[in-house]
Image (cartoon, rainbow, N blue to C red; front, side, top):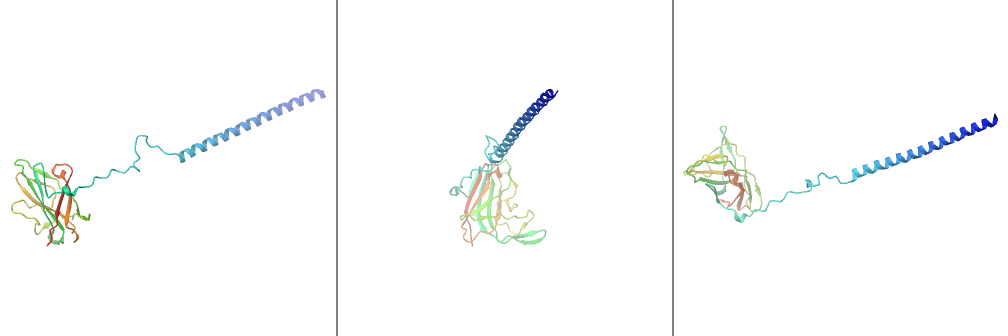
Length: 225
């Protein structure tokens, strides 16, 4: 009996030792697996945070691509008279004019703005031409930018700066209006006063106002008293 008990005890001891060894192996393998997962996870986070982000392989990055610069304007080609289809456009004069009038029955003095006067002539004998109005850009020869005056549409001018008995002068400022066949029109653009050093105006307007394309360049000496 004692011998059999010794054998049974020895068997259980080997079983326990075997289970302990298996447990140790499982724990070691589990530790390696956890460590591998941690390393892979850390690597993927590092790659995301430090690597370049590709938005599109075929598209340029709008943040770094600057638009192409507009070509410099050749003011030697500017003129005082041009034509678009049937319409002649002529810059008559540029000068400072005391400008007064009424608005809602009250007298208003606009001071002495720089006034650029235009004559439009519709040479067509049959077609009405719609003038869509201008948003002009004006500088002097020194590059000083002169802003256009915002003249109210209901402003009644005391005197038209470029009145002509031979042309329709009812549209004082160059807003949108129709040019009837065979008629001419006197109108103007008004800007803040030019500095005393300014000798000429350089005016950019759009040919689209008469159905054309591109900019129109006008250049004229400022008439001073």
